[in-house]
Image 1: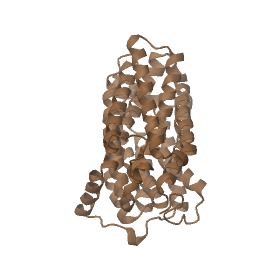
Image 2: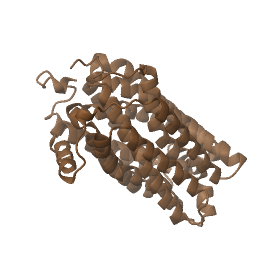
Image 3: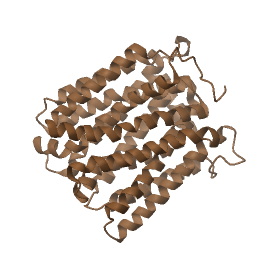
Length: 415
């Protein structure tokens, strides 16, 4: 199979619409997370939750539901096709958001956030499988980089939208907005997305087949290692997201303006995704991904050293942190494509194994780091450095000690 040709016909969809549709499918998750950030203090106060660190669970509960149900939606999408599981999941996402408008207890909100994330699990599993159905190799990495570039607009816009909603109404309107976004994406998918998994490629949905599919993923050295490495890096991302109101609004005193700092970091990530999409075909997934990981580790260590010496002023912290997260953008799409490359014949199951592992581990690691917030950035940036070191060790294991797809690597390793 050529790296520059789709693996199946695109059924009349142009490349631009494919990228935009997949980005929208993934972006509902960023919307569900980032739009909440300006309202976390108000939500906690309204529902009787005084512990600021525990308010971060509004994000964690969503991520845990999102990760867990990927175990179901992946095999289902390999059995039923891509469209039906996706539309069902989007319906659950919107319904849970609407129900959250009525809650009066913080624990009930957490339960509905878990359910909302569970419905959204279908969106990312199907998005990855959909792209893998159509593209392979470096072209898949390029498409996913462009998807991530479009997707990164959401973390720029969503916190600002959340802040505007909070200024003009109350936090319950945020959930109404999320339900509307989920409904619009479902309408687009329902009317435009083709079914890309033909009947002859579908797999039975039985325990033995599902277990065999997950065993195949776990037993593939490269795939399993890169999935775990991405989970570690996602832990850093989720720690940043959960802690951001405390860091920017609290520690740095930005108040209602903290979405602007969040948007600056997200813009740097979008720039990183765009740069990766322009270079990955020429340089390869491994060169780009490994370089980004080393940059992420180096910058995290610099920030850790600065934070250990004392308070880091915002004018220094923000640009260094934005550069760190720019490197993050060059890790996720490349590592995800490397992990999926050997598993095209079980794309749905592979995407669910990937998503489950990354979300559950990433959310758990992010929560551990977030709960250590002590009024300084040291727990956050030292957590970044530790997780980056773990990711690097996993990559070295996958590549048998060689980075950048060295001369002695296999043809697959030079992708």
